[in-house]
Length: 130
Image (cartoon, rainbow, N blue to C red; front, side, top):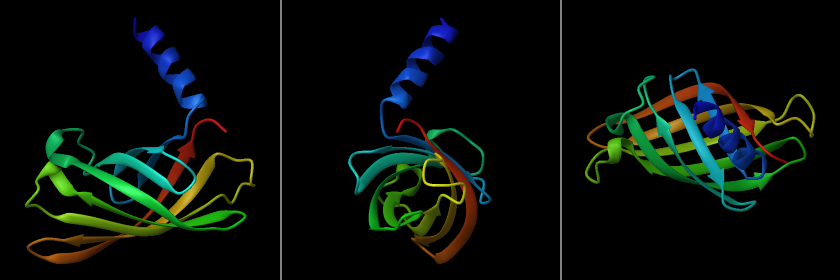
């Protein structure tokens, strides 16, 4: 059963705009590109995968270059409507060539709530499919 689920997930990911990423701030993220400009997904903070560490978000691609893209997003940290708001701004580069699905992500996450702070990070992302 586990093998079947893995294979089904792999085939779905190959035919879609699915992306997985991880960064130095301890964040693991999954996103789905809705089209060339917009994506939606979720991030898990602190290496935990529970509802308290989930940040659902939407992301917009602001500018596309030949080997990089500039993006901005917005999300709610911890699924709390009165909680902190995450506003990441960053760039995703493909230093291994245009055809590579592996990317390097530089990001500055603005976190707004009771306090305001910036969380810089460097990470890797992998885009499944073409």
